[in-house]
Structure formats: structure tokens, C-alpha cells
Amino acid sequence: MMIIFSSFQFSSCSEDPIVPPPAKKQPTAAFTWDPNGGYAPCAIQFTSTSQNAVDFTWDFGDGTSSIAENPSHTYNFPGTYTVTLKVKNGDLQNQRSSQITIQRPFTKANLTKVVITKMPFLDGTGAGWDPFDGPDLFIQLLSPNPDNSVLLESGQIANLLSSQLPVTWNLTSPYSITNFADFYFIQLMDYDAIDADDEIDYVSFKLDPYTTGTDAFPATITKSQNGSTVTLHFNWTY
Image 1 (cartoon, one colour):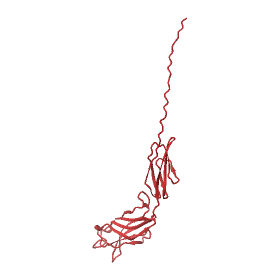
Image 2: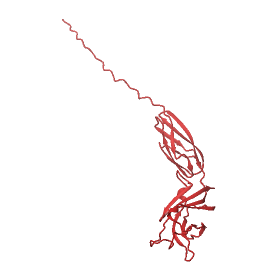
Image 3: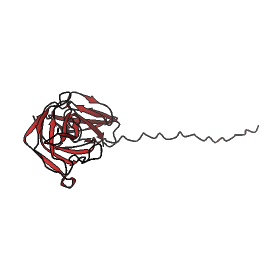
Image 4: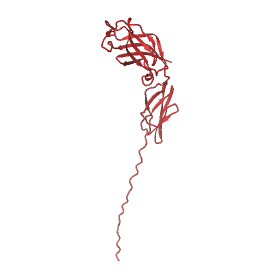
């Protein structure tokens, strides 16, 4: 009897090597903000410039927080606040803190000077305010509607010519405004010894729009209205 042995060759199937996930990178917290402080209430835009960050937790230092990457936050009260940004990437984390100062808003605007840079030298009919020469200009500060009483009045500039502009009225004593929501008026007048004085023009202003934002409580405010341009100078106090 012949015994035949067969030879079999087995090849093993090796599994693909297991590739570990990439190691998480250490995050680094960093941020900027705009504007750099201001007067309460003040809206601040925060922008994260962090590296390798996945999760964001902001502490604005006034008892409020956010998990947005680039949040906006309004500080309603003056003070110095410590803002902290904590960032994470898995189990890795990092944080950064900075201080922001929000100032107390001014409560009084002291008008110190009025500068007229443009005004009409002809009336509605196309005639001059005076028959033979320029207007005898004087300037009035009027109270809000509906009263519109004269609060202050400048001296006269006789026979004013357009080439003499700008004209400056330096108030002897500053006039203090405390209600920023009211409209006040700068009125330009032509003095007439025989007839009633002529109203040349007026410019209205209120101060509410100038108490917030990046340029709050400016030293000068320029208003153009009707045919005139007026620059108001203020000293802001409490």
C-alpha cells in the first residue's frame, strides 16, 4: 500500500495595525476686546485668539458668563472687571485673565463755546438780511420745546460778511445741561433797531447720542442743519 502525504501551506492573514488617534494639543487661551473700556453702559466685543481650543468658557467678572467663542457683553455699571477665558481641548485646558475698566458716565455737559462756520446770508426771497450791508449777527441759546425761551445771548457782530466766518461766541459763564434727552437750539439772529429782529437760522441738538460708544462725551460736537453749521464746545463733569 502506498501512502501519499499531501503538503498544505497555510498563509496567515494579519490584521491592519491599529493607529492611535492623534494626541490632543495643549490649548493656549488668549483674547482681545474692543473698545478698550468706556462709559457705562458699555458694550464690549470679545474675540478669542486662542490656539488649539475647542471649548470656551468666559467669566466677565460681573457675575455673568458665556460659552460662545467670540461673545459680546454689556457692562451696565462702572468698575474694574477681571475677565477670564478658559479653553479646553479634551482633558487639556488653559486660561487667561485681563482687566477692563468701565468708567462712570458724566452727568453734566457745560457748554463753553459756540462756533458758527456756515450760515445763510440771504433770506427766503433771495434778499440780504439788511438792505445795504451784512446782518448784525447775534446768537441765542434756546431752551427745549415747547418753551424755547432765551437762555443765553451773545453780543452783536455788526455788518457781518461771509469772509468773516467762522464766528466764535465764548460764553462768559458755561451753561450746564443735565437732561441729555432734550433738544436745545442755537438760533442765529439779525438785529434790527427799527423793525423786529430777524431769525436767520437755527440748529437743534441733544446730547443723548454722544454719551455712549467709542467716542462718548466728546469735547466738540458739530451740527449741520438747514443752511448752517455750528460747532459746540463742551466740558463734561459730574
